[in-house]
Length: 160
Image (cartoon, rainbow, N blue to C red; front, side):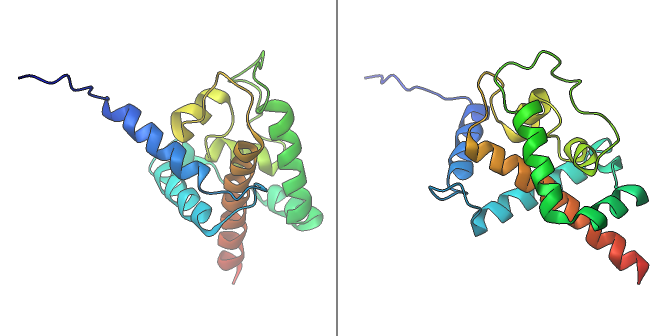
């Protein structure tokens, strides 16, 4: 007797596992939980292995801007940029919407592969075919802010 066995390709299985892990990273209010930190740090380690992604660093003017504005204000800017440039379902200039300089968040977006929907799908497995949910926006801002904080900390330790 032969049984029909449905075989699911591994890339689909891994995508489902990552999506389940992603969904578990937030409580109902979309707040970060400890598991979110693990997921973000894991993604940042993978991005560090990319010669392109790891080539991005904050310049002195970016660090001064962060010091002047404060991390809370930078986080507000990140939410604004993500909600207007990345979250909508249809983005007419996708792949070109994030400048390579001009704001610390832009640099962080390139470093964290959150600069366009194509990179967001490739590195974070977030579908291009829909508007980002609030949880997905929170995740993107969290990874951007984690990268920025690491850059600030690295710069402060280099000063001492």
